[in-house]
Length: 97
Image (cartoon, rainbow, N blue to C red):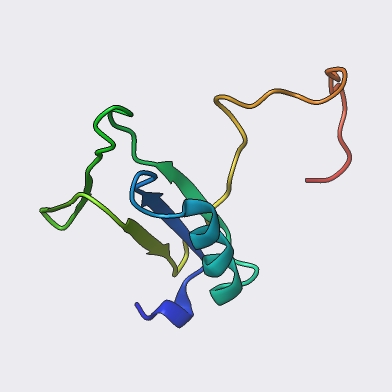
């Protein structure tokens, strides 16, 4: 599958050796409108070290991205570590999908 056939991206990045916020900004400029989900590789903050894996290889800096295409669609959900804003609402009925 070519990059031009991607419907979305799943990416994991090393936060110790790159400016991840700038990387995401550049990524979104390169692929506008396509969803990007993933996270930061974690490791010991004292050692400033983490690992990323791709096709049996180990990388200690950079990012790894996987493109989704074909009949697959990447849908994102906000979870872990997020704090709701305002009062919670209970949804009891919807109209449409």
